[in-house]
Image (cartoon, rainbow, N blue to C red):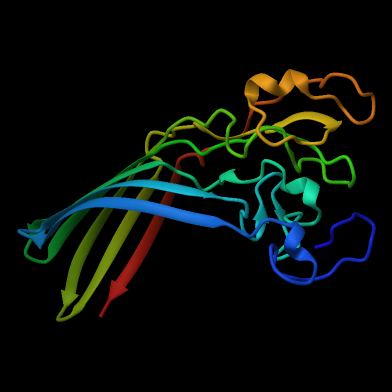
Length: 254
């Protein structure tokens, strides 16, 4: 990190020694509560269900920069200069508020040595937060200025999924069996958006703490000193759920 761009930098803990007191301390707080139900495997079937209510907030996203997907362990733009820290504390990319999972399976005896296994997994989770970003004026970072508090953009939609598994197991001889399996992931081929374009403008802008979505019109660019020009693609989907996938397998047990 370094307090000034294009000047010699140094390594230190933000908010502490080595001149890093000008930076806020690193913050990443996860809170969650889970309700869980399980019916153990008996009478050839089992069931599990869970609901998690969670929150992930802070100013440090981790080893990957969610703004542009840059993978740079300990080398992202976080804490590179005091300006990129403006509005950076808020809901992080992993702030999934609601997560629901239901699992069920049953083993069906067709014949004494032939069994059919069936299983289904149902999942639903709320959308992830998005931010309203612009270019940092004093560096080459294209999406490091937070125009409003991190995570105050529109959240992505809820995501749903259903996976199923079928297996046919034959007991060959004592303690030896052979199983043929098929797994279908995303059975209904849901194609909901899981990410959107968070770059509000390509223009260089200094972020201002405390500004909300309604205050975007108060910003001026640092190059033209005029109002922001909103990108036509801002808020549009950039990634979707993985499509339906089939997996076939053959397994031996002994």
